Image: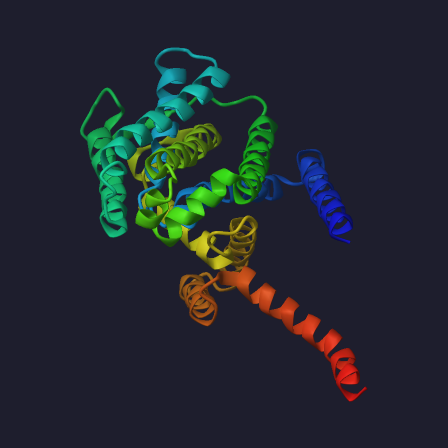
Length: 323
């Protein structure tokens, strides 16, 4: 039964991806843009979930890697004439390098989670300030990228990133690597005493979690055709990663996908229906979900499933008791 359910799940996932893949051919420009941004947020939410959901190190400035990737690709394309595929890889590499410098310094000393959160947040503001005050980097005027003749390329890239990050999270969740991360989440000192290489695991997952925002930022920069420090290093990007993950279910494989999808739909719907109140309604809804169920929508789904299972088997149990 388990194998059958697993096969059914893979079949449904393949059908969903195949359906999304035909959107550029038949969808309107609005629909294409909506799904492109939705794929972006799924990838960003999964990347935040990798480090924060599985180790407990909350990175409230994780959007800095998005900005670093965006500016790296934009500079290499506009000022050095690099082809976009190479600029894309360089954007991911630069984000990983920044994460390496931060991780080696702060994760080796096992800094407190609260301090790590503040440090990541401060790094975002430091990099943004450096860009704003550096004329060669574009300063506050920003950078304009040449138009891309085939926008559908960006759509498929972001779809691939969303799928790859989700598949990677599924592997992490089931692999010994993921068990080590969960041990760090429960008690890092106890995990280290029992032989878990905590520093190596934390650093590796931090690097991977920085790579995906880096390449995503490069794609979105070209989609926007223009970036400035206030767009690329906007703290809202970091907060959206966290909120979408917590809303769907932090520390789960499908929670970030569910959270990003529903939040994207709700935000778009509320913006159209009640433009003056959409922020208030959306914020109240998120707070309500988190208060009612700290595990997010995935926890609510588990409760419903358990309740249905109990109702299904309870008559059989009572019948057995009476016999």
